[in-house]
Image (cartoon, rainbow over all chains, first blue to last red; front, side):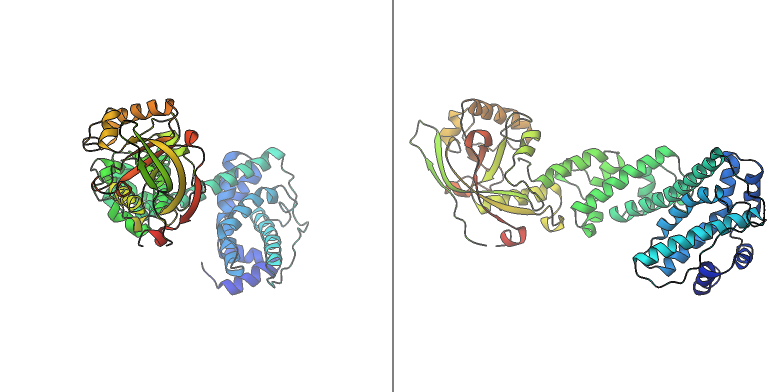
Length: 275
Length: 192
Protein backbone atom coordinates (compact mmCIF):
# COMPACT_ATOMS: atom_id res chain seq x y z
CA UNK A 1 0.00 0.00 0.00
CA UNK A 2 1.47 3.36 -0.92
CA UNK A 3 1.11 6.29 1.47
CA UNK A 4 1.13 6.21 5.26
CA UNK A 5 -1.96 4.60 6.82
CA UNK A 6 -2.14 7.32 9.50
CA UNK A 7 -2.33 10.21 7.06
CA UNK A 8 -4.64 8.29 4.74
CA UNK A 9 -7.01 7.52 7.59
CA UNK A 10 -7.37 11.22 8.38
CA UNK A 11 -8.01 11.97 4.73
CA UNK A 12 -10.53 9.21 4.20
CA UNK A 13 -12.51 10.02 7.33
CA UNK A 14 -12.49 13.79 7.17
CA UNK A 15 -11.29 15.25 3.88
CA UNK A 16 -13.54 17.19 1.55
CA UNK A 17 -14.84 15.64 -1.68
CA UNK A 18 -12.35 17.67 -3.68
CA UNK A 19 -9.38 16.34 -1.73
CA UNK A 20 -10.69 12.81 -1.98
CA UNK A 21 -11.06 13.06 -5.75
CA UNK A 22 -7.42 14.08 -6.01
CA UNK A 23 -6.43 11.13 -3.86
CA UNK A 24 -8.49 8.66 -5.94
CA UNK A 25 -6.76 9.92 -9.05
CA UNK A 26 -3.23 10.04 -7.67
CA UNK A 27 -3.50 6.52 -6.23
CA UNK A 28 -5.43 5.08 -9.21
CA UNK A 29 -8.13 3.85 -6.83
CA UNK A 30 -11.00 4.24 -9.30
CA UNK A 31 -10.42 3.45 -12.97
CA UNK A 32 -12.46 6.04 -14.92
CA UNK A 33 -13.20 4.01 -18.05
CA UNK A 34 -14.99 1.21 -16.25
CA UNK A 35 -17.44 3.54 -14.52
CA UNK A 36 -18.14 5.62 -17.59
CA UNK A 37 -18.88 2.53 -19.63
CA UNK A 38 -21.62 1.56 -17.21
CA UNK A 39 -23.08 5.08 -17.28
CA UNK A 40 -23.38 4.75 -21.06
CA UNK A 41 -24.74 1.22 -21.32
CA UNK A 42 -26.09 -0.78 -18.43
CA UNK A 43 -25.44 -4.45 -18.86
CA UNK A 44 -23.93 -7.30 -16.89
CA UNK A 45 -20.72 -6.82 -18.82
CA UNK A 46 -20.45 -3.09 -18.07
CA UNK A 47 -21.47 -3.73 -14.45
CA UNK A 48 -18.59 -6.15 -14.12
CA UNK A 49 -16.27 -3.51 -15.57
CA UNK A 50 -17.58 -0.98 -13.05
CA UNK A 51 -16.98 -3.36 -10.17
CA UNK A 52 -13.43 -3.99 -11.37
CA UNK A 53 -12.87 -0.26 -11.68
CA UNK A 54 -13.57 0.41 -8.00
CA UNK A 55 -11.95 -2.75 -6.67
CA UNK A 56 -8.68 -1.00 -5.74
CA UNK A 57 -10.62 1.46 -3.59
CA UNK A 58 -12.60 -1.30 -1.86
CA UNK A 59 -9.42 -3.12 -0.91
CA UNK A 60 -7.66 0.05 0.20
CA UNK A 61 -10.57 0.86 2.52
CA UNK A 62 -10.56 -2.64 3.93
CA UNK A 63 -6.86 -2.30 4.74
CA UNK A 64 -7.40 1.07 6.37
CA UNK A 65 -10.32 -0.29 8.42
CA UNK A 66 -8.07 -3.00 9.75
CA UNK A 67 -5.47 -0.40 10.72
CA UNK A 68 -8.07 1.79 12.43
CA UNK A 69 -10.03 -0.88 14.22
CA UNK A 70 -7.93 -3.87 15.27
CA UNK A 71 -11.03 -5.91 16.00
CA UNK A 72 -12.48 -5.41 12.55
CA UNK A 73 -12.04 -7.98 9.84
CA UNK A 74 -10.62 -6.89 6.51
CA UNK A 75 -12.65 -9.58 4.80
CA UNK A 76 -15.86 -8.32 6.43
CA UNK A 77 -15.27 -4.75 5.33
CA UNK A 78 -14.46 -5.93 1.81
CA UNK A 79 -17.70 -7.89 1.75
CA UNK A 80 -19.75 -4.97 3.08
CA UNK A 81 -18.29 -2.50 0.58
CA UNK A 82 -18.91 -4.87 -2.31
CA UNK A 83 -22.52 -5.07 -1.17
CA UNK A 84 -22.76 -1.29 -0.72
CA UNK A 85 -21.63 -0.61 -4.27
CA UNK A 86 -25.03 -1.27 -5.85
CA UNK A 87 -26.59 1.09 -3.30
CA UNK A 88 -24.16 3.81 -4.30
CA UNK A 89 -24.96 3.34 -7.99
CA UNK A 90 -28.67 3.56 -7.26
CA UNK A 91 -28.32 6.57 -4.98
CA UNK A 92 -28.06 10.31 -5.52
CA UNK A 93 -24.29 10.02 -5.48
CA UNK A 94 -24.18 8.91 -9.09
CA UNK A 95 -24.04 12.04 -11.24
CA UNK A 96 -23.53 14.37 -8.27
CA UNK A 97 -19.99 15.64 -8.84
CA UNK A 98 -19.60 15.90 -12.57
CA UNK A 99 -17.33 12.83 -12.76
CA UNK A 100 -18.92 9.41 -12.66
CA UNK A 101 -15.79 7.72 -11.36
CA UNK A 102 -15.49 10.33 -8.62
CA UNK A 103 -19.19 9.84 -7.81
CA UNK A 104 -18.70 6.16 -7.16
CA UNK A 105 -15.54 6.80 -5.13
CA UNK A 106 -17.22 9.46 -3.04
CA UNK A 107 -20.36 7.43 -2.55
CA UNK A 108 -18.32 4.47 -1.35
CA UNK A 109 -16.34 6.76 0.92
CA UNK A 110 -19.58 8.04 2.46
CA UNK A 111 -20.72 4.47 3.08
CA UNK A 112 -17.30 3.59 4.45
CA UNK A 113 -17.45 6.50 6.91
CA UNK A 114 -20.85 5.30 8.15
CA UNK A 115 -19.56 1.74 8.58
CA UNK A 116 -16.48 2.90 10.46
CA UNK A 117 -18.53 5.17 12.74
CA UNK A 118 -20.85 2.30 13.60
CA UNK A 119 -18.06 -0.18 14.30
CA UNK A 120 -16.03 2.36 16.27
CA UNK A 121 -19.10 3.21 18.33
CA UNK A 122 -19.62 -0.43 19.25
CA UNK A 123 -16.02 -0.78 20.39
CA UNK A 124 -15.91 2.63 22.10
CA UNK A 125 -13.07 3.65 19.76
CA UNK A 126 -12.71 7.42 19.57
CA UNK A 127 -12.60 8.39 15.88
CA UNK A 128 -13.60 11.67 14.35
CA UNK A 129 -15.60 10.97 11.21
CA UNK A 130 -17.13 13.66 9.03
CA UNK A 131 -20.43 12.84 7.37
CA UNK A 132 -20.66 13.24 3.59
CA UNK A 133 -23.64 14.06 1.42
CA UNK A 134 -23.90 14.29 -2.36
CA UNK A 135 -23.84 17.75 -3.86
CA UNK A 136 -25.85 18.53 -6.95
CA UNK A 137 -23.20 19.53 -9.48
CA UNK A 138 -23.73 16.98 -12.21
CA UNK A 139 -26.67 15.19 -13.73
CA UNK A 140 -28.28 12.53 -11.55
CA UNK A 141 -28.91 9.40 -13.53
CA UNK A 142 -31.69 7.40 -11.87
CA UNK A 143 -30.82 3.91 -13.02
CA UNK A 144 -33.49 1.33 -13.46
CA UNK A 145 -33.80 -1.34 -10.78
CA UNK A 146 -32.48 -3.82 -13.35
CA UNK A 147 -29.32 -1.79 -13.86
CA UNK A 148 -28.77 -1.56 -10.11
CA UNK A 149 -29.30 -5.29 -9.84
CA UNK A 150 -26.60 -5.82 -12.48
CA UNK A 151 -24.16 -4.06 -10.22
CA UNK A 152 -25.35 -6.01 -7.19
CA UNK A 153 -24.88 -9.31 -8.99
CA UNK A 154 -21.50 -8.29 -10.45
CA UNK A 155 -20.31 -7.15 -7.01
CA UNK A 156 -21.32 -10.35 -5.31
CA UNK A 157 -19.82 -12.36 -8.13
CA UNK A 158 -16.55 -10.50 -7.72
CA UNK A 159 -16.66 -10.98 -3.97
CA UNK A 160 -17.33 -14.67 -4.39
CA UNK A 161 -14.47 -15.04 -6.84
CA UNK A 162 -12.05 -13.19 -4.60
CA UNK A 163 -13.10 -15.05 -1.49
CA UNK A 164 -13.17 -18.34 -3.33
CA UNK A 165 -9.64 -17.96 -4.62
CA UNK A 166 -8.38 -16.97 -1.19
CA UNK A 167 -10.31 -19.80 0.39
CA UNK A 168 -8.91 -22.37 -2.05
CA UNK A 169 -5.40 -21.10 -1.48
CA UNK A 170 -5.96 -21.42 2.25
CA UNK A 171 -7.30 -24.95 1.80
CA UNK A 172 -4.34 -26.02 -0.31
CA UNK A 173 -1.98 -24.72 2.34
CA UNK A 174 -3.89 -26.46 5.12
CA UNK A 175 -3.94 -29.81 3.30
CA UNK A 176 -0.20 -29.64 2.68
CA UNK A 177 0.54 -28.47 6.20
CA UNK A 178 -1.73 -30.88 8.11
CA UNK A 179 -0.55 -33.98 6.26
CA UNK A 180 3.01 -32.70 5.88
CA UNK A 181 2.91 -33.36 2.15
CA UNK A 182 5.70 -32.64 -0.29
CA UNK A 183 4.80 -30.85 -3.52
CA UNK A 184 5.09 -34.10 -5.48
CA UNK A 185 2.65 -35.80 -3.12
CA UNK A 186 0.21 -32.90 -3.43
CA UNK A 187 0.25 -33.19 -7.22
CA UNK A 188 -0.47 -36.93 -6.95
CA UNK A 189 -3.37 -36.42 -4.55
CA UNK A 190 -4.92 -33.63 -6.56
CA UNK A 191 -4.12 -35.13 -9.95
CA UNK A 192 -2.49 -31.97 -11.22
CA UNK A 193 0.88 -31.16 -12.74
CA UNK A 194 3.55 -29.34 -10.74
CA UNK A 195 2.99 -26.32 -12.96
CA UNK A 196 -0.77 -26.48 -12.35
CA UNK A 197 -0.25 -26.65 -8.61
CA UNK A 198 2.16 -23.75 -8.74
CA UNK A 199 -0.42 -21.70 -10.62
CA UNK A 200 -3.12 -22.50 -8.07
CA UNK A 201 -0.78 -21.55 -5.29
CA UNK A 202 -0.18 -18.21 -6.94
CA UNK A 203 -3.92 -17.55 -7.07
CA UNK A 204 -4.93 -18.75 -10.55
CA UNK A 205 -8.52 -19.99 -10.71
CA UNK A 206 -9.22 -23.71 -10.92
CA UNK A 207 -11.88 -25.83 -12.57
CA UNK A 208 -14.91 -26.60 -10.35
CA UNK A 209 -14.22 -30.36 -10.28
CA UNK A 210 -10.72 -29.70 -8.95
CA UNK A 211 -12.17 -27.36 -6.40
CA UNK A 212 -14.53 -30.08 -5.18
CA UNK A 213 -11.61 -32.47 -4.79
CA UNK A 214 -9.72 -29.91 -2.75
CA UNK A 215 -12.79 -29.36 -0.57
CA UNK A 216 -13.05 -33.08 0.16
CA UNK A 217 -9.39 -33.43 0.98
CA UNK A 218 -9.48 -30.30 3.11
CA UNK A 219 -12.42 -31.69 5.09
CA UNK A 220 -10.50 -34.92 5.67
CA UNK A 221 -7.40 -33.01 6.77
CA UNK A 222 -9.33 -30.89 9.27
CA UNK A 223 -11.12 -34.00 10.54
CA UNK A 224 -7.80 -35.71 11.27
CA UNK A 225 -6.45 -32.53 12.76
CA UNK A 226 -9.30 -32.48 15.27
CA UNK A 227 -8.85 -36.16 16.20
CA UNK A 228 -5.09 -36.64 16.15
CA UNK A 229 -2.35 -34.52 17.70
CA UNK A 230 -1.33 -32.34 14.71
CA UNK A 231 2.42 -32.93 15.04
CA UNK A 232 1.85 -36.71 14.87
CA UNK A 233 -0.04 -36.66 11.55
CA UNK A 234 2.82 -36.36 9.00
CA UNK A 235 4.61 -39.44 10.40
CA UNK A 236 1.34 -41.30 10.86
CA UNK A 237 0.29 -41.03 7.21
CA UNK A 238 3.56 -42.67 6.10
CA UNK A 239 3.30 -45.61 8.51
CA UNK A 240 1.89 -49.05 7.54
CA UNK A 241 -1.30 -49.48 9.56
CA UNK A 242 -2.88 -52.80 10.60
CA UNK A 243 -6.37 -51.30 10.35
CA UNK A 244 -5.61 -50.45 6.71
CA UNK A 245 -4.44 -53.97 5.92
CA UNK A 246 -0.83 -52.86 6.13
CA UNK A 247 -1.21 -49.91 3.77
CA UNK A 248 -0.21 -46.43 4.80
CA UNK A 249 -2.82 -43.68 5.08
CA UNK A 250 -0.91 -41.95 2.26
CA UNK A 251 -1.58 -45.01 0.06
CA UNK A 252 -5.29 -44.57 0.72
CA UNK A 253 -5.07 -40.84 0.09
CA UNK A 254 -3.39 -41.53 -3.25
CA UNK A 255 -6.06 -44.11 -4.08
CA UNK A 256 -8.83 -41.57 -3.32
CA UNK A 257 -10.08 -43.83 -0.55
CA UNK A 258 -10.73 -40.72 1.52
CA UNK A 259 -14.18 -41.59 2.83
CA UNK A 260 -13.09 -45.13 3.69
CA UNK A 261 -10.10 -43.80 5.55
CA UNK A 262 -12.24 -41.48 7.63
CA UNK A 263 -14.77 -44.23 8.26
CA UNK A 264 -12.08 -46.59 9.59
CA UNK A 265 -10.83 -43.99 12.02
CA UNK A 266 -14.30 -42.92 13.09
CA UNK A 267 -14.82 -46.48 14.28
CA UNK A 268 -11.43 -46.66 15.94
CA UNK A 269 -11.98 -43.42 17.84
CA UNK A 270 -15.41 -44.62 18.93
CA UNK A 271 -13.59 -47.35 20.91
CA UNK A 272 -16.26 -49.76 19.78
CA UNK A 273 -14.23 -52.07 17.57
CA UNK A 274 -14.21 -55.71 18.55
CA UNK A 275 -11.06 -57.64 17.88
CA UNK B 1 -7.27 -43.50 40.92
CA UNK B 2 -9.56 -45.04 43.49
CA UNK B 3 -9.37 -48.80 43.60
CA UNK B 4 -12.28 -50.45 41.85
CA UNK B 5 -12.37 -54.19 42.54
CA UNK B 6 -13.48 -56.43 39.72
CA UNK B 7 -16.78 -58.23 39.91
CA UNK B 8 -16.89 -61.76 41.25
CA UNK B 9 -17.39 -64.37 38.53
CA UNK B 10 -19.06 -67.49 39.87
CA UNK B 11 -19.09 -70.37 37.44
CA UNK B 12 -22.03 -72.58 38.19
CA UNK B 13 -21.60 -76.26 38.52
CA UNK B 14 -20.84 -78.05 35.28
CA UNK B 15 -23.76 -78.66 33.01
CA UNK B 16 -25.57 -75.39 33.52
CA UNK B 17 -23.24 -73.19 31.44
CA UNK B 18 -23.80 -69.97 33.34
CA UNK B 19 -21.56 -67.46 35.06
CA UNK B 20 -22.95 -65.25 37.81
CA UNK B 21 -21.35 -61.83 37.57
CA UNK B 22 -21.72 -59.51 40.55
CA UNK B 23 -19.88 -56.19 40.80
CA UNK B 24 -17.76 -53.89 38.67
CA UNK B 25 -17.13 -54.20 34.95
CA UNK B 26 -14.99 -51.82 32.93
CA UNK B 27 -15.51 -50.13 29.63
CA UNK B 28 -13.59 -47.49 27.71
CA UNK B 29 -15.27 -44.59 25.96
CA UNK B 30 -13.96 -41.47 24.23
CA UNK B 31 -13.40 -38.60 26.66
CA UNK B 32 -15.78 -36.46 24.61
CA UNK B 33 -18.62 -38.96 24.77
CA UNK B 34 -21.76 -37.58 26.37
CA UNK B 35 -23.57 -40.94 26.32
CA UNK B 36 -21.24 -43.31 28.18
CA UNK B 37 -23.78 -46.09 28.61
CA UNK B 38 -25.08 -45.99 25.08
CA UNK B 39 -24.73 -49.10 22.99
CA UNK B 40 -26.06 -47.36 19.90
CA UNK B 41 -22.78 -47.47 18.01
CA UNK B 42 -22.42 -51.21 18.57
CA UNK B 43 -26.05 -51.64 17.54
CA UNK B 44 -25.50 -49.68 14.32
CA UNK B 45 -22.18 -51.19 13.28
CA UNK B 46 -22.17 -54.55 15.03
CA UNK B 47 -19.32 -56.37 16.71
CA UNK B 48 -18.07 -59.82 17.57
CA UNK B 49 -21.29 -60.76 19.36
CA UNK B 50 -23.92 -58.83 17.41
CA UNK B 51 -24.49 -58.20 13.74
CA UNK B 52 -25.23 -54.64 12.61
CA UNK B 53 -28.76 -53.53 13.48
CA UNK B 54 -29.62 -56.74 15.36
CA UNK B 55 -29.62 -55.83 19.08
CA UNK B 56 -27.60 -53.52 21.33
CA UNK B 57 -24.54 -54.84 23.13
CA UNK B 58 -22.42 -53.14 25.76
CA UNK B 59 -18.91 -54.58 25.45
CA UNK B 60 -17.06 -54.57 28.78
CA UNK B 61 -13.86 -55.90 30.35
CA UNK B 62 -13.60 -57.78 33.62
CA UNK B 63 -10.68 -55.69 34.92
CA UNK B 64 -8.82 -52.42 34.48
CA UNK B 65 -5.94 -54.43 33.02
CA UNK B 66 -8.34 -55.89 30.47
CA UNK B 67 -9.55 -52.41 29.53
CA UNK B 68 -5.94 -51.28 29.17
CA UNK B 69 -5.11 -54.27 26.95
CA UNK B 70 -8.08 -53.39 24.79
CA UNK B 71 -7.13 -49.73 24.23
CA UNK B 72 -3.51 -50.73 23.64
CA UNK B 73 -4.68 -53.07 20.91
CA UNK B 74 -6.84 -50.28 19.47
CA UNK B 75 -3.83 -47.96 19.38
CA UNK B 76 -1.67 -50.60 17.67
CA UNK B 77 -4.46 -51.39 15.23
CA UNK B 78 -4.81 -47.67 14.43
CA UNK B 79 -1.08 -47.10 14.12
CA UNK B 80 -1.46 -44.23 16.56
CA UNK B 81 -0.20 -44.32 20.16
CA UNK B 82 -2.83 -43.09 22.59
CA UNK B 83 -0.81 -39.98 23.38
CA UNK B 84 -1.19 -38.95 19.74
CA UNK B 85 -4.98 -39.09 19.99
CA UNK B 86 -6.75 -35.77 20.53
CA UNK B 87 -7.76 -35.34 24.18
CA UNK B 88 -11.44 -35.65 23.24
CA UNK B 89 -10.75 -39.10 21.81
CA UNK B 90 -8.52 -40.47 24.54
CA UNK B 91 -10.24 -43.24 26.47
CA UNK B 92 -12.01 -42.56 29.73
CA UNK B 93 -12.56 -45.59 31.94
CA UNK B 94 -16.14 -46.31 32.79
CA UNK B 95 -16.92 -48.42 35.83
CA UNK B 96 -20.34 -50.00 35.81
CA UNK B 97 -21.97 -52.40 38.21
CA UNK B 98 -23.88 -55.45 37.06
CA UNK B 99 -25.50 -58.41 38.76
CA UNK B 100 -26.78 -61.12 36.44
CA UNK B 101 -26.26 -64.69 35.28
CA UNK B 102 -24.64 -64.73 31.85
CA UNK B 103 -24.07 -67.50 29.33
CA UNK B 104 -20.68 -69.18 29.75
CA UNK B 105 -18.46 -68.88 26.72
CA UNK B 106 -15.35 -68.57 28.87
CA UNK B 107 -14.64 -72.03 30.22
CA UNK B 108 -13.65 -75.00 28.08
CA UNK B 109 -16.97 -76.60 28.93
CA UNK B 110 -18.95 -73.44 28.15
CA UNK B 111 -17.26 -72.96 24.78
CA UNK B 112 -17.76 -76.53 23.65
CA UNK B 113 -21.33 -76.43 24.95
CA UNK B 114 -22.03 -73.53 22.56
CA UNK B 115 -20.22 -75.00 19.59
CA UNK B 116 -16.81 -73.39 19.89
CA UNK B 117 -13.47 -75.17 20.46
CA UNK B 118 -11.81 -75.03 23.89
CA UNK B 119 -8.92 -73.19 22.24
CA UNK B 120 -11.14 -70.21 21.46
CA UNK B 121 -10.34 -67.38 20.60
CA UNK B 122 -7.25 -68.75 18.88
CA UNK B 123 -8.22 -69.11 15.25
CA UNK B 124 -11.13 -66.73 15.70
CA UNK B 125 -9.32 -63.41 15.71
CA UNK B 126 -10.44 -60.91 13.13
CA UNK B 127 -13.87 -60.07 11.84
CA UNK B 128 -13.91 -63.02 9.43
CA UNK B 129 -14.99 -65.22 12.33
CA UNK B 130 -17.79 -62.96 13.46
CA UNK B 131 -20.46 -64.73 11.47
CA UNK B 132 -19.90 -67.73 13.77
CA UNK B 133 -19.83 -65.81 17.03
CA UNK B 134 -22.70 -63.54 16.01
CA UNK B 135 -24.88 -66.56 15.25
CA UNK B 136 -24.19 -68.11 18.66
CA UNK B 137 -24.91 -64.81 20.42
CA UNK B 138 -28.12 -64.26 18.47
CA UNK B 139 -29.39 -67.62 19.72
CA UNK B 140 -28.62 -66.61 23.29
CA UNK B 141 -30.31 -63.26 22.78
CA UNK B 142 -33.42 -64.92 21.42
CA UNK B 143 -33.43 -67.17 24.50
CA UNK B 144 -33.51 -64.06 26.70
CA UNK B 145 -30.00 -64.33 28.11
CA UNK B 146 -28.75 -60.96 29.46
CA UNK B 147 -25.44 -61.49 27.71
CA UNK B 148 -22.38 -63.70 27.78
CA UNK B 149 -19.03 -64.04 29.49
CA UNK B 150 -16.19 -64.91 27.16
CA UNK B 151 -12.45 -64.77 26.65
CA UNK B 152 -11.10 -61.39 25.68
CA UNK B 153 -9.35 -61.53 22.32
CA UNK B 154 -6.94 -58.84 23.50
CA UNK B 155 -5.82 -60.72 26.62
CA UNK B 156 -2.30 -62.21 26.37
CA UNK B 157 -3.49 -65.57 27.72
CA UNK B 158 -6.59 -67.24 29.15
CA UNK B 159 -5.21 -68.94 32.21
CA UNK B 160 -5.31 -67.88 35.83
CA UNK B 161 -8.19 -66.02 37.52
CA UNK B 162 -11.06 -65.32 35.13
CA UNK B 163 -11.08 -61.62 36.03
CA UNK B 164 -7.69 -61.27 34.34
CA UNK B 165 -8.85 -62.32 30.88
CA UNK B 166 -12.65 -62.26 30.60
CA UNK B 167 -14.95 -59.84 28.91
CA UNK B 168 -18.71 -59.50 29.24
CA UNK B 169 -20.98 -58.72 26.33
CA UNK B 170 -24.08 -57.27 27.97
CA UNK B 171 -27.28 -57.41 25.91
CA UNK B 172 -28.49 -53.99 27.03
CA UNK B 173 -32.18 -54.49 26.48
CA UNK B 174 -32.17 -57.90 28.18
CA UNK B 175 -29.96 -57.10 31.18
CA UNK B 176 -31.62 -53.83 32.09
CA UNK B 177 -29.71 -50.60 32.58
CA UNK B 178 -26.32 -51.05 34.32
CA UNK B 179 -25.44 -48.85 37.26
CA UNK B 180 -22.79 -46.23 36.51
CA UNK B 181 -20.27 -46.27 39.35
CA UNK B 182 -17.65 -43.84 38.08
CA UNK B 183 -15.94 -42.34 35.08
CA UNK B 184 -12.19 -41.75 35.19
CA UNK B 185 -10.22 -39.59 32.72
CA UNK B 186 -7.48 -41.21 30.62
CA UNK B 187 -4.55 -39.59 32.40
CA UNK B 188 -5.95 -40.66 35.75
CA UNK B 189 -6.47 -44.33 35.03
CA UNK B 190 -4.29 -45.43 32.13
CA UNK B 191 -0.93 -44.72 33.77
CA UNK B 192 -1.92 -45.83 37.26
